[in-house]
Image (tube, rainbow, N blue to C red; front, top):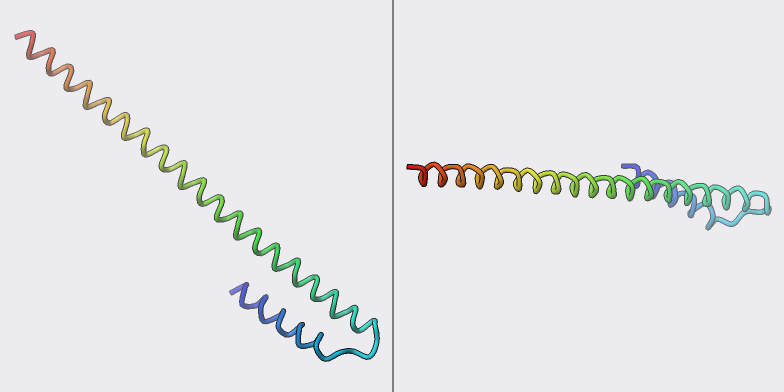
Length: 91
């Protein structure tokens, strides 16, 4: 939704710029607005990139935690097997 708003705002600014103004001051107003719109769009892109990076980090952390738990489960099973084997040998 935000990208659509930014695109719409940018399109309207570009159409204003295409009109050509009579004074340099008016051209500066349009140029400043375009620069501000570019900055806002870049900030939005950075926020999206940061969110994607955070999601990737969480996903990696969850995968590492899951792998550690799988290893612990394997260790519990191995310990049980070893204990059962020792019990069988004792009889």
